Length: 87
Image (tube, rainbow, N blue to C red; front, side):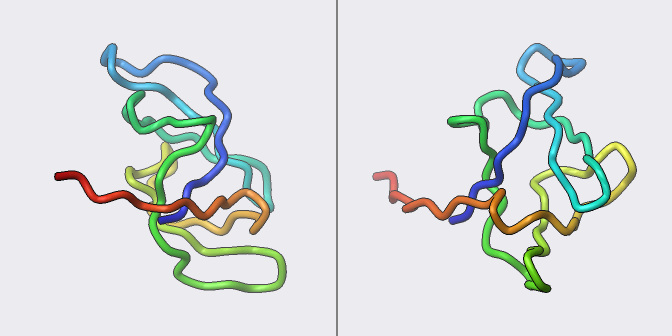
């Protein structure tokens, strides 16, 4: 599983939501995520969909405020983690 580095910038409409900022090649995108999904200033995004130069195409867990589900991010913003099975 891959995790994407984010910056927490505010609270969502619901107490369990947080607004995060994601660094992109052209600036940043904002997305509302579950506060519980944020671990170590990163959120889960799954495996990369594509690579181009130093950029990686990812699919977000929720839509950004501009309506995007997939965005290009600098590859150094992704962290590979070990997924554990729950019993």
